[in-house]
Length: 467
Image 1: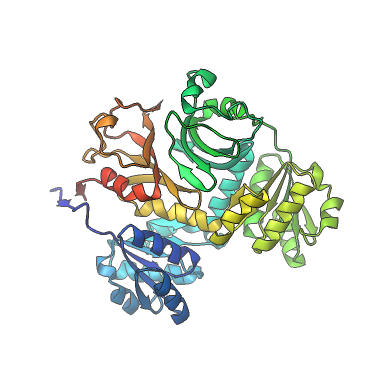
Image 2: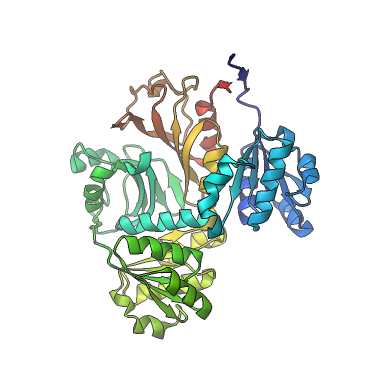
């Protein structure tokens, strides 16, 4: 059988159809439009379409994304990717089925939030409509919270290479022994087993540092290291490992339930406070060890009654963002060691650190991270955004025909604001130097400011595609 080879021009814009102009859909559309992607946004609400066209420069189609006629109008036959992210799981599924019938080669990504579909993700991928990727941001939020709970002092944690490599954000305290150090001082402080400092956020500005840059009190320091040196690295940042034993969850919705079920398996004592009495009964039937309390988690008297100061962490995950902020602030004031706050509105993020809430999770950010890895050129394994999406960390496979292989790193046309932070070759994890040569098949981790991402995509993109 002959192998068919097509040549794709690297500068050709990627055509993407997005169904659903809600917070996730419109945000992704705006982000991709800035990167000169060819984006078409479909929504059935005239008011929503009007708001989108006032803010971002994308094509729009008014109508239901589950309609074959609307998909044809949007140009589904020439689209490389269909992204279905409406608020209706059923609409998203029908849209993917219609797209498969009309354009079977279009890659389909779908957001499904109902837990009833959890056991059917693989079925939907291996049978019509042959969905390529199922995204459940609530599952990803639970994973994020679990990582934050497991890394003391961290305000941001991402896993790469199956958890062997971790990308961690730590706020530097004035009392830390690293305060005032330059990056060139770190080898003497850490020795051979030192982390790589990839970025510093200082007064909302994201900096890709060089050797002469200092670490200052109040900085958010992002570093990458292997799991085996993480504990020692945290100690150098004066973040001691403290076992997690008792957790209070405020909000017994889908995320609260998933969190409790996960923590139960790790032998953590869990309490859930939930307002809705019917939901409390459902949780009591579904969870075997968790204590279910019916009440208002933002009520200070209830928190005192439940001895909040004895809890290792309070997790505010209700559907009301203002309630989550209030609960987290009360928890901190009443002596809880750690508080994690679920937020969706992007406008809230810059404000939270100013009131002392640094450990924040977002279903919106989780959805965006899951989507980005599937719409980036090159063989991207994972993508994580940082600091209100000022930067991305990309985990990718170096393909034989991409521009990144077979040259010393110092000879690569790496854009300003981007940094190759790790090379994984088999079981070996290499912190690269200028003379390091990336080989075909290596896994690589790249940190890139947002403006540098399109150039990184070109470096990672293959010149030939076989199918």
